[in-house]
Each structure stands twice: as C-alpha cells, then as structure tokens.
Length: 309
Image 1 (cartoon, helix red, strand yellow):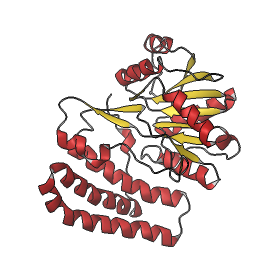
Image 2 (image 1 turned 90 degrees about the vertical axis):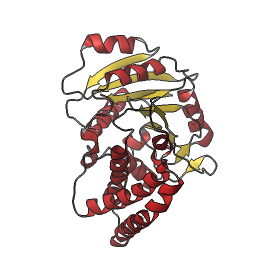
Image 3 (image 1 turned 60 degrees about the vertical axis):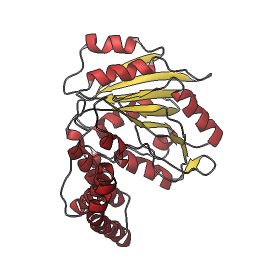
Image 4 (image 1 turned 90 degrees about the horizontal axis):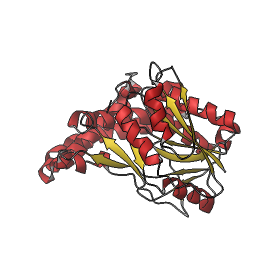
C-alpha cells in the first residue's frame, strides 16, 4: 500500500509547525510506503528556510507544492493531482491546525483492511486555550462527531479533517472537489456523498486520534452562530449540488423553517438550564436561516477568513 498524506496550509505557520511535529512521531504500518505532501496555498510560496526545517522532522519522504489559486478546493484538488501523478493507492488528509496521535495512521489503515471500505473517517476533538469559558466548551458545535456504525460502516460523509480513502474513487469515479464550494466549505461533504452514490463505502473509526486547535477568534458566540449558519447554508447547497428533486429541496427548507421557529421558542427555557443550552438553541435559528439564505442566493464565504493565523 502506498499512501500520500496531504496537508493544505495557508497563513497558519505556528499551527502547521505543531501539526508536522505530531506527524514526525507517526508509526508507519508494515508494508506501507508514505509520502507527505504539503500543499502551500499562500499567495507567495513559503520561504525555504520556513518549510525545510518543518519537513526535515518527518521520518518519511516529503515535498512541498505551491498552489497559487487561493481556496481550500484548489488546494485539495492540487493534492488529488499529485496523488494521481505519483500513482499512490490511497490519499489521507488532515488540516494544518490539527495534530494526531502516533497510532493515527496505523489505526486508519487497520480499519480499511478490517472493514474492506474505500474510505475511513473519524472524529476530531477540539482543544481549547485555558481561559476559554466553560459554556463555549460545552456547546454542541464543539462536541466530537458521533456515529452508530453497522459492522464498522456508516451512511454519512467523511470529512477531510480526518480521512483516508482509496484513489480508485478519483481514478475510476472521476471525482474532484467542486470549485463552487471554494470559500463556503462543504466541498468534502459533496465529494464523499458522490463517492457513496457511486457505491463506495465509508468506515467509522471510533477513536480520538485527531485534535483541532480552537483559536480565540473561534471560541466566541459570533463565530459559533456563523458556523451554525454555514451548516444550514451548506445543507441546501449540498442538496443542490447532488441534484436534489424539488420535493427534497422543499423538505430541506421546511426543516430549516421549523428549526428557526423551534430555536426561537427554546432559547428562553434552554438558557435557564445553562448558557451553552441557550447558545445551542440560538444555533438552531442560525442553522435554519443559513438554509434560507442559500435559497435566496445570499452567498457565504466562511473560508476567506484565516483563523489562527
């Protein structure tokens, strides 16, 4: 098995250094060859004196490619192109603000082999700074994703913050990350939903092996509600990208309207239980408004702002 491990990066030098430091301790499974790819998505390439000491930490072959077109979709598609050119069997992604345990890759490969799935994904755990208020830590947005797999498999998309997948999805399925999601996010949901439609299976690895830094610009009410708005916006955009029928689209918007109404009604009582519960209720409102914003053609460019830069 030949694996390319790709990390797209833009403007987050400190987090990138911590990310690569964690990768330097990775245990590489037997009979697995690893190539690391840093996709430099900065406006001008990172200076060699910045990049080389970081890559020198890694115990496997590594290289950097520059993708001058700004945006997460261009960076991820550049990784797909590199993986195709190198002829690797699998591609793995994590984000530049994440760190992994030393067993992460070993466990992901093992899950591929045990389940026979083409895709393996798992939860990402949020790491907060010490002064982050408790109500922010407790909000549902920051809880690790949970799934109920059947024989290790799930019906639900993988996310590129913690994933490994067979390149057959790209070679035979012809899949690419869709450019219309470049700054809004959700490109990974569409990519892996399309893989599901083509018959590829997704396995869930229920272990806390990947950790994401939460900078102060995200550990606040404004960002939490913006992210919930994005989730709703993304839900309708994703449905449209996957060719939703009029009935399916109407169902998304009906549920969004009910989310707004339910959230408004819940806020007072939920806030009495705890501030985080009130924020979760407000999040339902933001989520529903996001879907209706997408329906009205109101754009949302969440990834134009670099958090943790």
